[in-house]
Length: 272
Ligand code: NAD
Image (tube, rainbow, N blue to C red):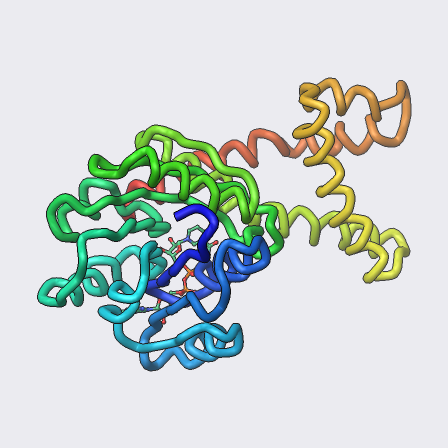
């Protein structure tokens, strides 16, 4: 597959599919002309989004699979059996790699729904994929090959970072990095609201808050220094940062965030 443009199909053309498609195109792995996406007929916004991208945008799932080497299953979890059920009686080659991003849908379930022997990889991406800053993990299905792992890594690395994990970790990963952008947006909003409360203009407050979160993340990732050490470095004795940290810790900041990951992990198991 290397060197050639990948023919990629999305079953479900919503937010995650759009983020991934834009990332793959920006990375030069494919072009709009080699992308096809299906959406529900009533979902005009998704249909328009893929059309506007220059890709083929349809309301049936069979052509998506027939025309693609890599089929990305990106419908909501409860729709997966319905959408893949559409493929049952279709004439489809077995030379396809199926990547599923559906939360909580296991490799076993996917392998049961798809034709016997299908090559399946389960992926948990996140929406910063849209700006090539996603954090993805993947789990290999029983029939997936080393070549499938290589192409999956190439695709996911084009939209951020990517790591292989065991399936038992998937719910916690979903709670941390799948849902995580939402928690980060809350934090950015809160930082900015605090700045505005203390007299900063709104737009400056958002810019400073977003860049601070980005910078902090890069410091942890790139220096590989423990976040506690980095925190100590910016906390002078008797200073304002120590006062701010004390305020957060009195209100169980870290315990609250940890509890959110635990609650979201449990919720993943409930909806699975
Ligand atoms: P979404 O609601 O934006 O998109 C769902 C898409 O499925 C829509 O385009 C809809 O038209 C289409 N659809 C509905 N019924 C269909 C059918 N029968 N056949 C074909 N298409 C159909 O949802 P989303 O946020 O893009 O999530 C999609 C998947 O990605 C989910 O399984 C979710 O768990 C996973 N995911 C999402 C995120 C995220 O941050 N949004 C992160 C990680 C994983």
